[in-house]
Image 1 (cartoon, rainbow, N blue to C red):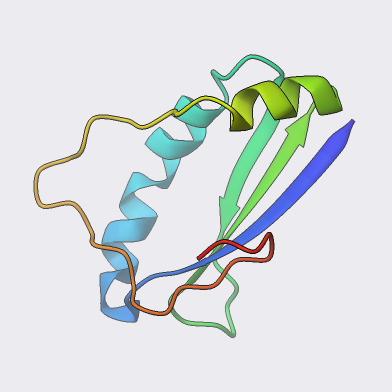
Image 2 (cartoon, rainbow, N blue to C red; image 1 turned 180 degrees about the vertical axis):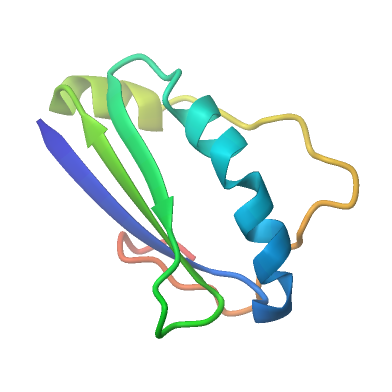
Length: 92
């Protein structure tokens, strides 16, 4: 089992909108082969921060997932990425 934690920044004024899409994003992400669990959370003491927790069956399945783009069709009026986002895996 592999556990991946990601931290993403978004404009704090978009909080209600971000929370409204969580169920659909979690459902979509759990359809990936090898993903046992995908959950999003919002730390109470960090406005504008979203934390993703993923559990993968094997390292190989995670590598396969990362090697393929899994972009959903862009939503109309989608929330734009926050400037200066941060990531724990060396990505913004």
